[in-house]
Length: 303
Image 1 (cartoon, rainbow, N blue to C red):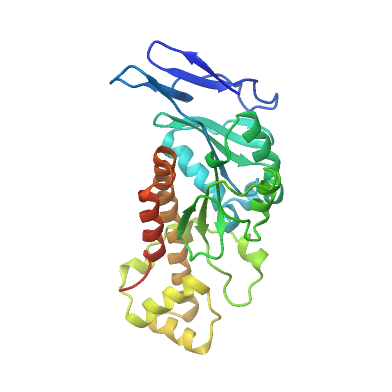
Image 2 (cartoon, rainbow, N blue to C red; image 1 turned 90 degrees about the vertical axis):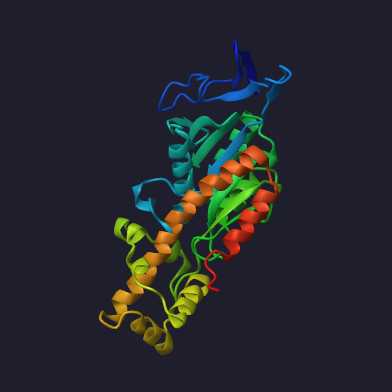
């Protein structure tokens, strides 16, 4: 439960009971981090804000850091850094950070019980902080979306995503909670799905700008679009198309160049995701979110 403490200029909310004894840091109320209501200077009335539970799905440990299946964790890290929120408390089998986006209190959550058991953290945290379903934002990887494309939606099913399935199970089977899906595309060729999800992105691959330094012809632009959409098998025709991208280097190197562009898209998506989350927290599912989704849908289409 969230209690209100009055200050001369504002109120703060803090949880009814202290965090787990396993906390990385003693839990304390910070008026700069857990602001829940501020005075309306026009009429002196204080407006209270319902907290948001923002959950990124992933697997804990260095073994999984930087993998496709962990982009939910990466988004939480990006929001944490952008908002200056320290992720330094363990509660309900999750690493959490408490802060705010402007006046709205938020809890950033990274479940530590592994992907398939994420609900073991989300359910208890939502109950403890009395967060309604409409304020539980789940962030996770989505193979049905092209690489680097985001989608915000107010509700949905689990789409065979075990992490989402676990969360729904611990929310009494309810599905009426928002989610931010981060597109990672499909495995190339006949690559095993599990291997694809748990494949790690290297630092070089994520930040190289190789492809942006040379223009794409229509054929290669079309191939890149198809590659991001469907990750097709590398047929002789496709291999020839890749080779034509830069004849001076090998087909293998050209494939790596296309892959670098895919990883680079994820880094850009994380920045766009921060702004999308801010918009959702401050304004809900407004026309701005509709425009955001439309822009994401067509952002890599060639005209």
